[in-house]
Image (cartoon, rainbow, N blue to C red; front, side):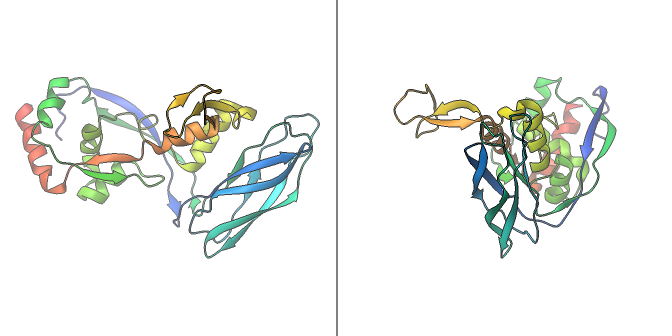
Length: 252
């Protein structure tokens, strides 16, 4: 109702609802003699009652895919036990652990949105009087609509979330769910998910591989870090929403 002066465009996005809660676990595999010898847990997650461990296939063909099972204590995965080590691994495979919550079938929806990104002056003037923001960490699966409903009790105010953070692309500007991220990594890197992407020093700065103290960062770790960096956003206080709406009307 506030975008009558802005052009329309059609945007399609995916909605995945979930049952339950918790944080997904993460793990890395170690190989020896062409087989998976052990799996190290890097994050035990929370909220688990059961879990499925999937190990990517070996690089050599023919080969045998390794299998493993998760040990859960008080909702946390404390150990991943190797059932079969597999055959034909030349590099450590990717390990994907199911989430502690259930996701329903993803539904693709198309909506007509107003393009509020074209008028730079509008964005600048609208936020000119807003100098203090709260910080918010996006929970896995949350969309701007869900956040707006949670913060402002109105999902239609999702544009305030997007405007305050200068983020307008659902797919690129906001974090993927754990499941979608793992699929993206596999699609992008295939068997090279655990190959080295770059090296960093103790401060996290990019360095050459031969620099003192250089630590390798895999393609998978790089994508996960990049995804995590999108979780923290700025939130305009609900008490200032009326000011935002007034400024909006004055600009139209």
